Amino acid sequence: MYARWVDDIAIDDPVYVTSSPSGWTNDQVGLAWLEQVFDRHTKEKAGNHTRLLILDGQGSHVTMEFIDYAIAHNIMLLILPPHSTHTLQPLDVVMFKPLAAAYSLSLQHYLQASHGLLAKHALKAFKATGIAPIDPEVVLKKFRKSTLTAPPPLVNVNKATITNLINQAYDPSSIAANNLSEILLRLQAAKEIAEYEKDALRAALHVHQKPRNRHEPPLDLQQRKAFHSGAVWWSPCKLREARFRQLVKEKEKEKELLDKIELKEAKENNRIYQLKIKEAARAAREEAKKVRDEAKAVKAAELDAKRRDRDAAKAIQQPQSGKRKASKPAAKQQPKKRRVGGAGGGTLAEVAAPAPPPTTTRRGRAVNTPAKYR
Image (tube, rainbow, N blue to C red; front, side, top):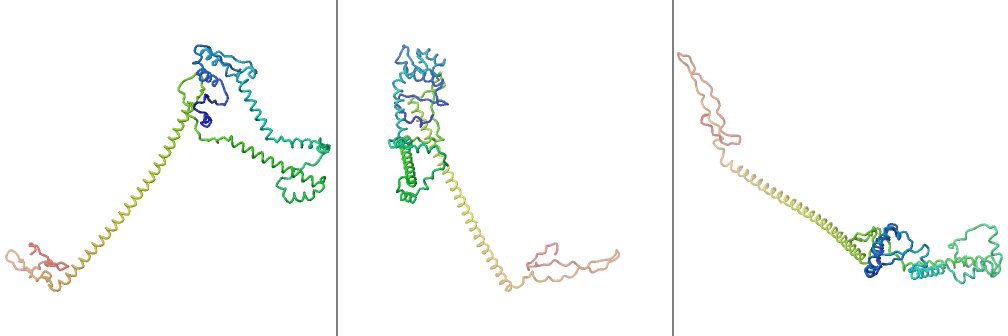
């Protein structure tokens, strides 16, 4: 059951609604009506007295569950004979019969207004059948064999064609006059059809039904009490509660959707913020690296300048001081003489001593000879 089905029901309307899979009443719906509608609204007024329920012979009214419930709750059933409700049933005689008559009158008026039952059409009917004026050929020519040709479409009739036909229509019995009359009649018929369709469309605007929403959820009708039947009749109060629950659910869904949108936007903003932070950190690292490289270059230049200054100072200082003593060649030492001989005596033999180590380095620095080599 959808909300748009019961939009016109007010909270104070004494009506009950229900639904079934087929859309028709059944045994469950009949038993539910007896228990939830009739018994509920009549037992307080009846008290301990027996209540009379007049029914027709519909199948849902004569089931064993229906009869057992009526007997158990002091309800007497009066089932009318078949095909007699139009005379015996109070609602059919007093309420539904005038309603049916009003429906029939409205339908008849609609049929008369929509099918063009006008006085001029009635007069034309006598002429079309050859009665007034008398013209047997109107009827006889219908039985003569002729080649069936479709009438030309209205789009082929233009102003020039009509003008030519009118200019030729001096004699009423001429073929041109007949053709002109046929064309004008077809145009008049098309005009009346267009006007009828226009009026029908305007009338349909007053009873226009809202298009069904395929995603429309059914009403949340909650049953708080167990009944003998599987069907349930719903009062306007229950319908209002169901509408309120549906409205609350729709608001919750809207809020949830808005929360999702806000969360998505927050995540996107956070992602953009993190990207900006990373970009700023990368730019800071590049700037720091650039500063370090510049500092290294300045320091290297300073060291290089100091080294050049030191070398230049050494080059200037060396010619003034001359060569250091350590850089002069060492004096030649006399080779030591070693005694060589037998036991009886000996003679001295000259043995060459090893050359002393250099006293300066390649750069001209003095080298101190260890004591054991002196």
